Length: 88
Image (tube, rainbow, N blue to C red; front, side, top):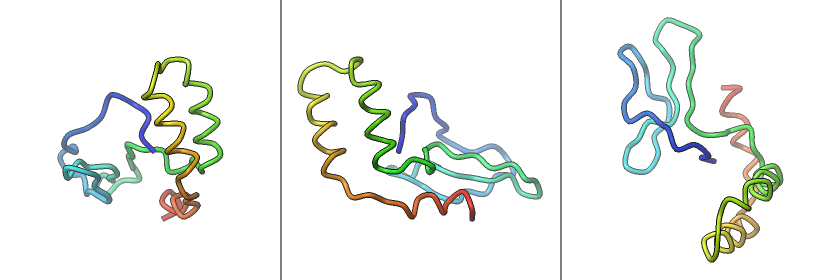
């Protein structure tokens, strides 16, 4: 559920990595001894809300890449368990 072009490649000093993505990139972390948490993805989005966001942004994409993204989104399974990430 990525949607931004800016991202971390390493976490701040004192951070504990909670999740990693492809290439070992940090995707979620918390600062030790604080209530500060960071995530580089959208765990709140379900399949339907992701499709709705895609439809709003689709005009920014041209040609086959847009068609391919559309096809993959519609064929992807729903993943409601991602919403538990923030509660944990």
